[in-house]
Image (tube, rainbow, N blue to C red; front, side):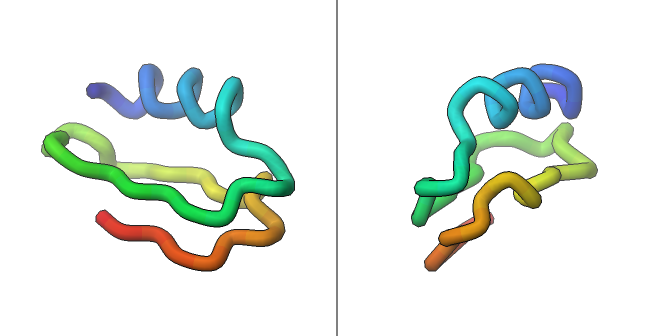
Length: 45
């Protein structure tokens, strides 16, 4: 998954009620904007 693909996925799936984010099986993501997740409890990379 590229940065652009990740950004598209995050834009469509991430929201203010998102609590958990897991990023796995990728080596091409260099930037991950989680600013829309205001209730994030845990993220794992």
